[in-house]
Length: 215
Image (cartoon, rainbow, N blue to C red; front, side, top):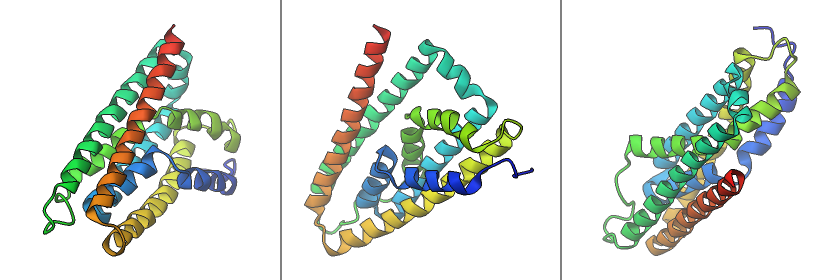
């Protein structure tokens, strides 16, 4: 593929800012690392990364433009995402209660479930249609009309994913190390509760916005 019509370095700078910005994805990675160690955080990050690639593919195929042009479909997609955030928020609060009540001989919490951590990361990312909107709006700014398509979407999506994985992995490892040295199990439980509550608040905000759009 000819990349002469793709502004890779400027996009990399924008993607780096987006990757390190606080949001639901980073919250989930940190919470997973707190509850089930760094491995869980990295698995959640891999799920998030797959979600980013899927959104970039949708943008590359032009499907996101179709979704955005149909308000009914886009509102339904957004509501589905909000329900996903509600489920994850309630799950994290439940996990927090179990963490606080866990025996002292089990400080690491539950054993890591690869599919659970990976699935949550994927669900949280796919629950946020704004990621897809980002690719629809931003992609044409860095790609010429001739190069706009699946190839450029995968290339720039891959750059975004790589930057995000590096950042999320560093965060997961740091939080895990901090947990061993400074954070008690009870504090971990309260932090998980706060994270779950933030997911619930985000979901409720999205639902309210969708209801306003429908009315």
